[in-house]
Image 1: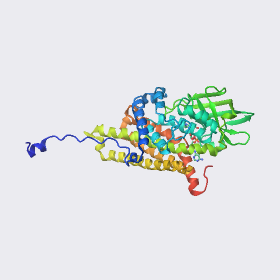
Image 2: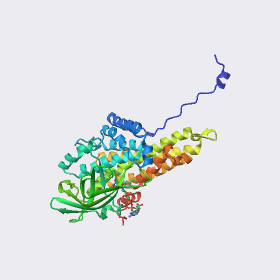
Image 3: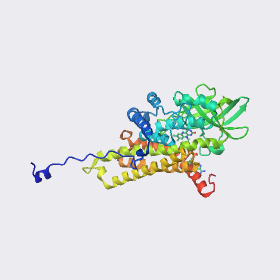
Image 4: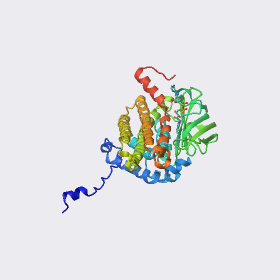
Length: 407
Ligand SMILES: Cc1cc2nc3c(=O)[nH]c(=O)nc-3n(C[C@H](O)[C@H](O)[C@H](O)COP(=O)(O)OP(=O)(O)OC[C@H]3O[C@@H](n4cnc5c(N)ncnc54)[C@H](O)[C@@H]3O)c2cc1C
């Protein structure tokens, strides 16, 4: 039998280090078995198919078409939309899937959000019964991929009042002229939802344009981005593009209807921003546990632990916020100002979190191979798209003061 002295001298086996836990307040416990199963499917796909290849595509500014067959097998096209072959499900599930995707890669989450949320969402919310029956099933199967064309080269934040792309009715045909900028998926997708001002009544209307077969439609890829490099953004030119009346979104009568689509997708960006922080944090924590300085893991230093605790606080606060906005959306109670507050807060916190993660890695924080740099750069696009921080706060400011400060 070992003596007490011998036992005291025996080197102790190091305790296993805790794995990253980005669900600090145990949200997973509140989900149903079905929701958890969808999330697991998405996580496995992102982990096994996307994570191993995504840095290469990010560096090359290219979209990983090789993962699309496996993506289609997830059967999540039209998540949150009921009927028409869509995946259905709650807004909470839509958000959780976005967060899970963005935890691995914000570009893939964006690709899916543009297709399923913005393009399919426009048709689901503002299309006629015939339009929904025609367009949604192939989009749900992801045989046809969509994009959402609202922003223009000269009109970004001011799209509500100043769209310059025009629509002129000629009998049963509409003639579209103008340009759209920043349109995600546009360089390669099949269907564009184009928002244009009707010359007759000055109201914004939506049109379904088949990109690949419509004369007068052309698209140029936006080059040299430093964020969301995997998403292909395009500048679309519409030159006397003729669209049948059957392709005008029947229930989109004014910009108010465009805003209804954006309300849902803004809170989706809140989830993406939360996922982006989670991915950066996980990489940073692993690095803190492994990287030695002064003979010790840097994770044992108080100031590094402070960075990690601040990151986890941001993530957890954002999770609380987006879970609540999803609950409100599921009860059809989510307002523009609630969605705006969530988008602004989560994206601002995301910027803090990813910059702390980058800081924690020292020099390696700016090298793509160490995991954090891609999240750090991609965060900048999430911060600005779907309405900038300032625009979201103007929406909130108007709601709380009663004064509009937009112009
Ligand atoms: C990666 C990426 C993907 C995108 N994808 C799409 C897409 O798929 N479809 C689409 O339609 N659009 C898309 N966008 C466009 C995006 O929504 C716009 O970039 C955004 O709305 C801001 O418009 P802007 O870039 O023209 O900036 P601007 O409107 O020119 O704003 C410039 C600055 O001025 C500030 N500002 C403007 N007005 C005011 C004011 N009244 N008071 C105070 N500050 C103000 C803004 O906050 C901002 O800081 C995408 C953008 C990016 C970067």
